[in-house]
Amino acid sequence: VKPSHAFDVFSLGVLMIRLAVGKHAARKLLTSKNLAAHLEEIGMGFSTVSLLQEMLGPAKQRPTPGRLLQRLPRNPPSQVMMAGDKEADAPDKEVEEQEEDEDEEEEEEEQDDEEESEEAP
Image (tube, rainbow, N blue to C red):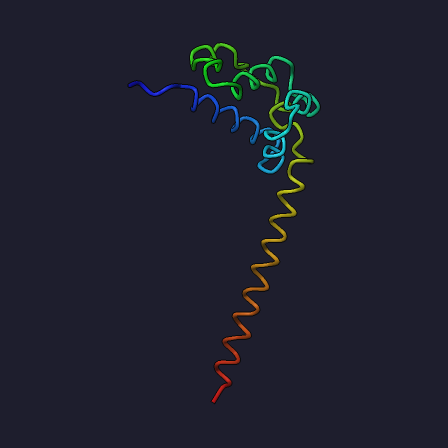
């Protein structure tokens, strides 16, 4: 049995959205009921939005890799590929800062524990 291309096409669609808007914003977009409207809001053109909808749609209706290659823009404008970066990066930065704070707190606790164990008789 030959594996279907549908899973790869779906994964590529998800990756394209993540590259365009960032990880956290992509999660929100992918679970939204009106994906097309949100993609258009961030600056993706109609043809790209239409293609992404097909890529993320029902498996039997997804384009084949050859058809996908024909429909992908050859030289996408950089503002389309980077659309929404400032908004999309904000949640990532917040998460990163929170993780850094947690890491620092853990390090401080470990240092305190080490100092206490050295001082113990």
